[in-house]
Length: 587
Ligand code: KIV
Ligand code: ZN
Picture 1: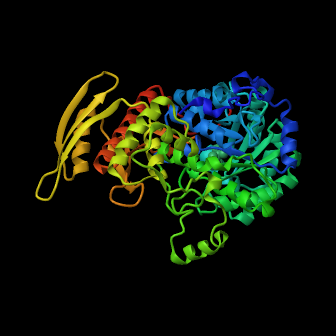
Picture 2: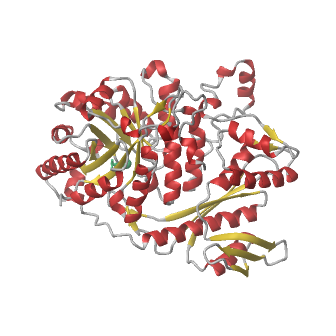
Picture 3: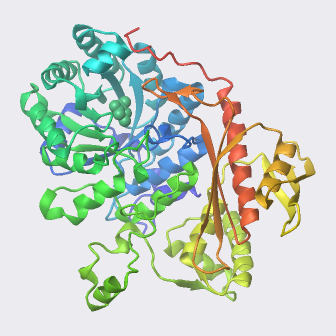
């Protein structure tokens, strides 16, 4: 995707082009002053952690290019802070955060009225030890607005069983490590992990120490999604009122969704005076996930009189961002998911349609166009030219380069020959399949499959290795056509893996629809291969997605994409350093 689309190009000649803007003007001069202004104002800062907490979801592993693309899209979406990763996890993770900081973190963007606004703050997560904090600083310092986010658990259960630290040890570590982070970076966020289950009086002391040591954002994680809205909102009120200096720093909300209460808890925290929300796109994250950005932002937007707050989010970018994250992570969105699910704006039940025809607002509380969902059905036909396609894609908000346009046009023509109507959904799927492609080692050249009643399914696959230039053909039998295809691919690629998920969806209705296949694979020894920031084992799953009117071809493409990701990650991981689960005491 074109990187220039992130910025502002001067069309009138009156505004400077983004490249001409001195980005240092966007550095925050006095962090305490800035935090005080936010804490007392009506703007909610959106801290997106899709690339850190979201990436901790099983199977959501992203490579560096995918992280950069998502970060660029998050900037376009208008998020204020991007938590780009956990740099101490591995040299690869550090490098990805550094690249996000040095590109997206230095590119001004376009505000709602066309004005040029600051690049997002880029945050790196660090446990409360010097090594992690040094790595986080090394990774984020290239951004115009860098942030170190450090954390240490404060619940009795975590202190006793995970950290093996006393309350006094924890207080001392928080003071020392926040001060150390502050000596490197003026923007420091501190999180008492498992705050939702911590003793509120002990939390008051911990947060007082963090403020004195220089933290300007205090994040209150409900790490295990245990609290109810009343409890969580009450905790925020208690902390704001009792932590000395608490009224002049930004309280931040970080909720997990184990009881399905993450969005409700986050909204309760906002009503209690917090001014930062930590969220992920589509609510992805460990276990049941994190608070979803789209739900919280749209609640603030649709129920403005209730919250009397605003965000800097460009809501028309929500759908596109959601789609990109779903494609890259392979995490399919449930159809009834609020805001971004396929059914969220579909009014199919007869009674609803009748009501809708009489008055749109009877069953619809927001317009699909608010989240950037273009609902026009018939798009282009088989006689449409390349210009018409480009114009349509631009209207849909896709920014494609000439090479990509050429390929999408070829596939569009192919599809238009097979299908009577090509819809927006078809085009979105094609664009997604073309643009959101990681660098591929193995590419499908051609395939032939035989199957049917009374026949043993067989597949002949020809693949090209883009690294060596070799083209290899092999064949296999299988219990079904997809099995035969996957076995033939395995014989060529030769990488051991288990298929853990295979899903086919139709992009549109009717039998000539595009098939959209998602697969997830894992290496046989992948369980616990890598650890999360909190020291929990992380299952490494690799996902792939393929679109074609022939679902067997779509299946082959999806499998190859997952294999290519696995190969690339294994290569990057060869330099991974093991993380000690208990490396949380100050070094
Ligand atoms: O859920 C959690 O506690 C976290 C912290 C690291 C902020 O993700
Ligand atoms: Zn979390």
